[in-house]
Every structure is written in structure tokens, then in C-alpha cells.
Image (cartoon, rainbow, N blue to C red; front, side):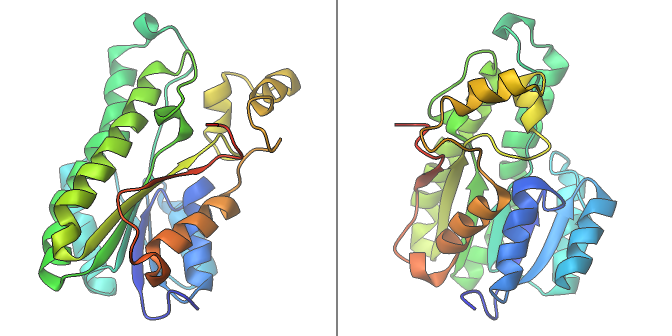
Length: 246
């Protein structure tokens, strides 16, 4: 029970990696608020773990502000904040990605981290403790062709993680990131463009351990980085990628 007595918010917690993190945190004793733009999915995962749920659009300042109020009613200031919600554009040459898709990727993947920090960091600093985890991607370290602006958004998240970590360290708040390789989540088809055996084989060929990542993999990595066992770890971008970035 490595998170006994802890509280956590996980954005995008209704499916994929986020749901894996939620389940692992709950299994280790945390009280978790599952936040997702899909309210039904968030509620289902929350019911499964005996937690709380909230509908949130992480790209909206008003929606994130409302999440603070929901958290306050549920358990007060969270001990752990996981910025997991993310989107991608379909594979395409960089000059052919629409402005609308570009804006959506950067609003959900980048602006959301700013909005969550603006709303939650003051209380974490005042308390003098907390752990923030940003779910980045191997795309931010070793970009794949045709996922250009998604790659850039995850590179931004990795740099933001380090910037947040160095600034918040004196306040007792740790900030880390995990960098998953492509996994069995709702985004997999979008990354590949089409979900065919041939395309899966092509993706798997770039992963030395020979399999996609799973929500359980991310839950295990997130658990360590957000637990007191990692009390001396801040500013890292941990590759959970089966060797993809070697």
C-alpha cells in the first residue's frame, strides 16, 4: 500500500494509460479522482475503484478551474497530479496537418499542463509537498515521421517537466514524466493511421522487447515516480518503451 493516505487526480483517466494509472494507484491505497472529457468512462472507472469522477476539458481554463472545486469537495488539495490526457493528429506530412488539428494537439497536450499548474500549484507550494507526473511519449525523444506536431508537443512536455521540476523543488514539489512507446490504447489506431497486421508489425519492429506497452506498464512506472520511494527523483523523463529509444 505505497500510496495509503494519498489523494490523486488523473486526467484522461477513463481509458488507456490513464485508466491503468488510476487502477494501480487505487490498488496501492490512494483515493483517486478520475477526470476525463468522457464522463461515462470516468464514472465507470471511478465506480470500479470506489473513487470519484469528474468531466473535464483540460484545454479549457473554466473546466480546469471547476476541477479544482470538485477536488476540494472530494478530498481537498491532491497529493498527486497526473497530466495524462492527450491527443494526436493522423499521420501526415507536416505541411498537410490542418491548423485546427495543430491547435487541438497543442491545446490538449501542452496548454493543459499550464492550466493545471496554474490552478493546482499554488496550493501544492503552500502545503510544501506534492508529486506531478506528466505523461509524455517516446515521440518527444525519438520522433516518428509523419507524427511531426504530435512529436513536438511531447517534446514540449518533457522540457516543461524539467522546467517545472527545477522551479518547484524548493517548495517540496516533485515533477517527473514518463515516456511510453505506442500501446494498446484508443490512440494506437491514430498513431498508425490504420490498424492492420502489417502496420502493427512495422511498429513492433521498432521496439526491441517486441511488444506494445500496456496500461499496466504505465501504472507501475507512475506508481514509483509518485510514491515516497522516489522522494529523491525529480525532473526525469522515464522511458517506458521496451528499448524503443536506444
